Image (cartoon, rainbow over all chains, first blue to last red):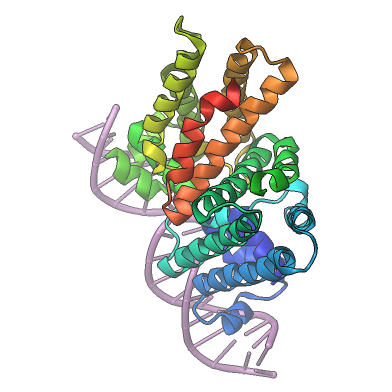
Amino acid sequence: MDRLIDVFRREGFEGASLARLQDASGLKRSSLYHRFPEGKNDMARAVVAEVTNRFGTRILAAAGTDSPLEDRITEIGQNLVGFYDDGQLPCLLDSMSIGQPAEDVAELLDQATTAWINALAGLSREAGHNRREAQIRATDAVVAIQGALVLARITGDRSAFERAITALPERLL
Amino acid sequence: MDRLIDVFRREGFEGASLARLQDASGLKRSSLYHRFPEGKNDMARAVVAEVTNRFGTRILAAAGTDSPLEDRITEIGQNLVGFYDDGQLPCLLDSMSIGQPAEDVAELLDQATTAWINALAGLSREAGHNRREAQIRATDAVVAIQGALVLARITGDRSAFERAITALPERLL
DNA sequence: GTCTATACGACGATAGAC
DNA sequence: GTCTATCGTCGTATAGAC
């Protein structure tokens, strides 16, 4: 699964050919079809679902601990640094939303993005902001990260990503 | 050219098949090859170069008029709204940088991005910020726009894009 | 400069042996 | 559950007529 995720996040849906998925996974085509009977679309769905799940449990889960609010935000930031390898890895949400993804995949991407924003918005509400303001702050925090990842991919400059992470507490609080 | 650009910006390099480019342009394959002898890669290069050129002349050129600084920034913002159709159109820099673009295309994408940032950084320096600070402000302004476009593509929510445009003056000044 | 026709490899997907 | 072998289609690219 790790390797399938890696292919999709780096290459996007169209670029993630069965040949690459086969090589990355170490399984032959037909074995992949055994596990994902509906083919590449099935793999894409599974990959997005798995990443969404990991994102929730490994990154956003820190929002719900009993640490002080700012510490939780900082921890989420550090989790994000790990997840995107300090800005060197693309975001699956970006890669997979290029072109016309299958409707179900598009829906999963939308839900994952919304869940991410909502998790951050919850933290911002804890800081005392009203619903609308918290939503804006959370959205802009995610936007900064997404934009920084695009920039890092194009120019190799990861400083904007580092700033987006560092600024996470002040953006939400 | 408009239609070729549209295909690449919406579909990305891998998704921009010759069939789509053919349909969009109204020319047959062989006619496209007559104009772009090195094939699809040649089209991609031309598309990125053309967009970079347009971006410079139609959007960033407003930076160099003799209007008041803030007015120039606001005008660039409005130009961006038009260019991205209020956030509904993807950015070519994002779409085309998914996967492994050919080296020369990647270089063009990098240059275009850097030129964009530099143009905004020039305005920020005019506002009195030092080189480093201006560079950061310009970068983060571009990051906000790129991130907002990703978000709009995934969720359909264009409000972050509108905020990124509205915030352009305060980000640079 | 545009077209029809076609080459040929890569694509996603499947059959059937083990 | 994995494999080899293969299918039909679509991919990029080219040849050659007009």
